[in-house]
Length: 150
Length: 76
Image (tube, rainbow over all chains, first blue to last red; front, side):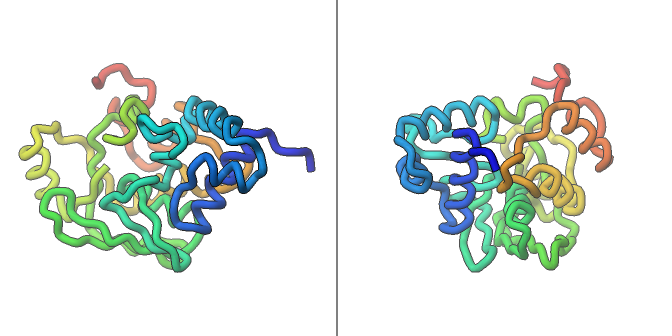
């Protein structure tokens, strides 16, 4: 198998560390995992951002705010899967973590207005359907313009 | 993208925050969106769907109209 290009190595390392640890890695953690200089990792972060595959933390390029569907910071969408705890960026990504990891998952989320606890669950590759709804405040053409708000 | 128990609490949230009410997505549609976007995210070939792929996915889930058009210039 030919050697993977650097951006792919970095992308895979980000997701492997996240899946294993439950938290999104820093540039130094990625650097250690794949044994390349941290400044090369940072350059890869920038290119992956340009490809819309991650969002660096505003003001701190060493950290990742969003590696979809995972969040680098706590959110109102915690997800338990494979015995680990993750944070999703939004309700779509709460399901997205189960889809990405191909496993059962449960998200103890809450109603966006009332704060009432609402649980999302995926079991045996299928969602446990309820009458809840998701509201998308931003049109599809503009999702990437303010990804944190979206 | 937030979760709500019902359309009623969506409307209350929109009114409280002066945010326009947008289309709603049920949990089956949401799960299918998650699978389309993320099922291969941890693999070598993963990438974000392009605009044409996004439009195809939305249409397959009955999410239609300018709001779901990745190339639409009707919303700002």
